[in-house]
Length: 391
Ligand code: PLP
Image (cartoon, rainbow, N blue to C red; front, top):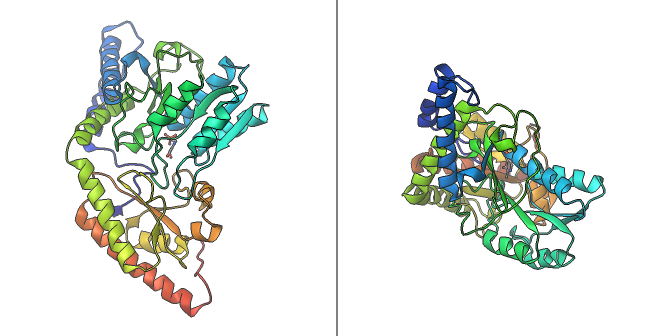
């Protein structure tokens, strides 16, 4: 298989699995237990917290372990709603993941004001619109994703944070897609909250981090036994957290080394090959700063579901629509917000790379994409329109 779907989930690094095993088979004690075994597990857990803090340039006291990206985003929005009832407004970007968009919709159903900041045709957030909403002075929280899961388009996070703080608003970023792909330095980008998910950077699924700056208040979303300093109850998912710590350590190493450039080279070579050999093909978001690993390609006249199925049969994995959170092929909300028509969105596929890909497999996948897309195009030319296949 050639796996080009790393924005959905990444391959777990074998060394991460290795680091977890002792905490599944040997050190299974509860990190809150006041016995030798419990203390040993607690030390390992705190070491993992240090690894995450170091990756983010944050304090370990600002790192809360969670079950992943969805929980982190929900927790921050719910905290703002309960802590700041006099501030009615939640501000989000138009291309947010459902982990933010769904709690935002609930906010508006519960009599809060919701402002959705539009993006342009490249997926860039309208910063003027953000400023004009903030001048209303009633914003409890702004939540803007750092990198979009479908197009990879990056938000100018430092500028956004400064703008929010200038107007006295708290700012959260869903950084699930950016972690492991770009540096996150929270001493320089002074976010109040940030959400990460392990399975997007070679750690297991079902574990993540919520960063809560020690400058701000946070009302816990999950109440119970008071774990995680009382900010997130529930016995910690120890083995996965150990794996997350290891993955954070590897991320830091790779970000500082050659891997970053290698991934960019693979994505660029893949895109160049396809854009050159398939006339009319376009990369959504390519005119904006974007993640080095993401290629969101529009294949005019081709049904993305059909191409996805043919690629899958050849052992090439990629995504259509918002496939990272659905087995159904929904029209993409991100592309819609960018002004892309339903037809064009239905002819778009996302390819996303990681350090576990190689340049040669990437080029061979690009070649297959061209062959299969040309085949579908010929079939659709013989018919009257795109060949629609059911997935
Ligand atoms: N935010 C973004 C941008 C994502 O891509 C995802 C995962 O698809 C999530 C949030 C949700 O993360 P998790 O799967 O850990 O709940």
